[in-house]
Image: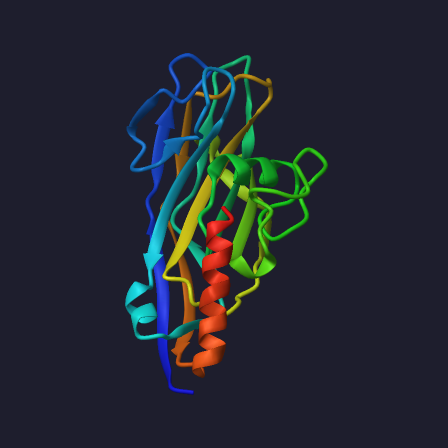
Length: 232
């Protein structure tokens, strides 16, 4: 098999969002491409998300399959979260996903908070079948983090408490990889949020090889990629 070594990566910008009312993130001048979770309103969500893609259509035209070898994230500086008394900021949860099929931020956030996530069996609060219940093979890489406020550091600086990685690193013939990152603030009072949230810039790095498979194997892989993408 003819192989071509490549390192795929995507840059995720940092973000700063603020709140003037303690109910929703309404200061988005420095959001830097991050958005509020769709359907969120005052007091209904503390989540922001960013989404992007990696275009592999040129390799697909050459009938090449991508074989990921490893994947990881790199992150700059630190995250920060602040609140105004009597509300206190405890930390944040975040998830980064690389998928061979499109991702829905509402479904992903529900899965994440419920303790599952794409490629895993969903928790009891989410349907066991239907949209969002991805095949393990379509989730090439995922990373979840829980960061908590370090009271000994100034200004609500957060430090990692948990960092888990998962994913299939499965070969794919998809023409696009979909990347999504969701950050959810954790506060002392349900329905309220803090005054500011800073998310550092990061990147996803995925070294691998592009190879040419026998025609039959490649067409079956391509057919399966299209079928999975159309189920979303």
